[in-house]
Image (tube, rainbow, N blue to C red; front, top):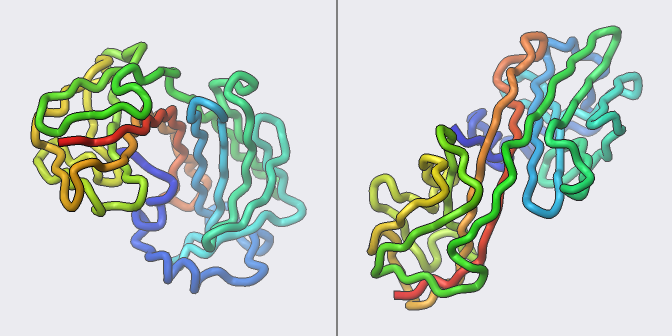
Length: 246
């Protein structure tokens, strides 16, 4: 299953409101055993930058966000990450230019003599060759999406985002072509995929500004020492703006 960082709370059965209510001032890892800590980690190559994030949460029903205890040592690529708070979340992040980053993102978490270490292996890089950026893509004709190089035997997820929000202009409700679902559509990573005519429909306007996104994903094994239910995910993703036309 494709795991998008923004959907983790949903995977846990936690609504944004509950998450916000669960944000306790000053909640940290200091008075929690390692087995009480839930971890989510991502590394994402978007073609320009590589951003790696680690998020820690209490392994309870509310899964409240946790900041690091001062005695804890978290390293991403041997670098102390920046603490960032936004949207009821606390994340520890490192951002690098893609050309300056390794494809293997080493993460180490040391606390009270316990050590968690794992590597997020970024999937192979690729570029989208069809559609071209800002081109018109017809809905009434079969249209071939293409990327290079392919990864035979692998999986590519393809989705559609709209510039001004979900469901405003385009609908994608045909089985196996639900591109506006958060996970997109999983296809064979063969370098091309045909979107059949009329599987994407215009709603209120003929011309709809949108973006195709393409994502490869790897998952690392989740450490047994941590509270179960977290995820360690590496993604290589590309996006192309286009205009959907009749």
